[in-house]
Structure formats: structure tokens, C-alpha cells
Image 1 (tube, helix red, strand yellow):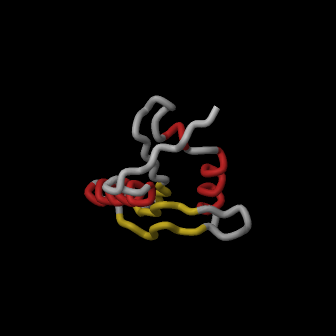
Image 2 (tube, rainbow, N blue to C red):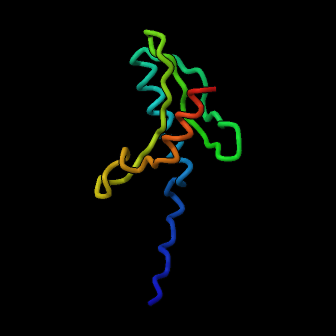
Length: 97
């Protein structure tokens, strides 16, 4: 069977634009909660490295690593369910740098 991909409407935001908007909303929310931005889109070093969306400092001094995820619906488990073991690993590795 052949299933042609639906063409994206010209007025629809790109996946990157949607992701950037979600990241901006998360940053704003966390800053209003008293966290301070340390780094944004931090690239972890090494071959298996990745990117950490936000690194923030909580008022008590705790360093907070933020992975921003957004899904249109929760039919596949919501945003938290989309965080893979690989993402957890590079966040953990970055916390040791």
C-alpha cells in the first residue's frame, strides 16, 4: 500500500518552531518559579553526547537539568514517556562534568 504524506499547510509552524516555543514556555515558567538560567542548548562533549535544553540553578543552589518535551496528545504516554534511556544517560554524564 502507498500512503502519501500529507502536505504541511504553509501557515503551520515547523517542528523546530513548535519545539522552540515549548522551550521558551518552559524557561519562562521555571524563571517565574525562581530558577536562574545557566545554559541553554548545552552540547555534551564526546561521541555519545547530546544536547541539554536548559541547565538552571534553583534558589537552594541545586543544579537542574531540563529536557523539554511536547506532544500533541497524550495518546502515546505524554511527554515524559518520550524521554529515552539515552537522554537520561547523557544528562547523568553531563552532571558529572
